[in-house]
Image (cartoon, rainbow, N blue to C red; front, side, top):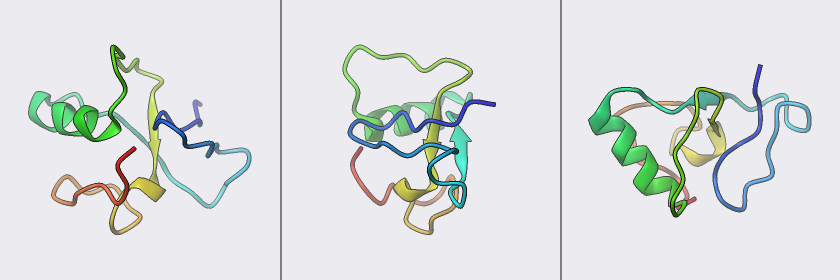
Length: 72
């Protein structure tokens, strides 16, 4: 199971940080575009293995209504 955060500058992984959660990029287009805008990686398209760690969410948990804690 993939477990490396795709956010620019983030070095979190499941192996180094087992207490973190890692979330798949949403497939729903509106949510997906919001996540991609917040991740801010130029010329990058996520794969089915791309994950974002819980440190990038305000509550520390995935929530479609919350904004990212950090600009990644």
